[in-house]
Length: 187
Image (cartoon, rainbow, N blue to C red; front, side, top):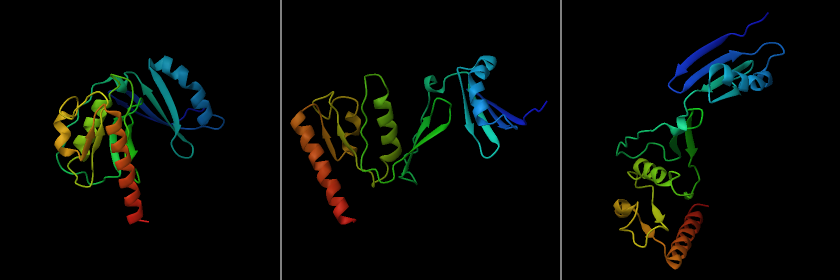
């Protein structure tokens, strides 16, 4: 009987197992066994991904990282890399980074209570110290910039509009014009 070599690393959310594959027991067989491993390990979910030739990484999650409160401590200094934004962790507690390379803008939308304001506030805390980042806000929940979630950030914004549709359309047209002008300046 063959037994795979494994390395086990527990963390606050569960366990990470690095395992070698065996003849006739490869990635697919590990993936098929994931739900049984979840039951045996009393995990909420188990993921199996390739980890190089002949290796897999098994992630067992016992407590959900998406429901665990997080803390963010802004440095107040401009980020060294404006092309990457660290969001936090995914459902397997893996670090999540978003590439902002060649991204002219970001839209945040969703249902109430889904974390939009928290996400935007983290973005502003991380990127506002850089003069290379310009912030424009369209907040349909308020009529004036002095109201709502972003009232304290108005001085850092180059543009703001509230729930007035004509004002929002004018802002969006201005942003499109600015993007077109930037593209013409840098072909």
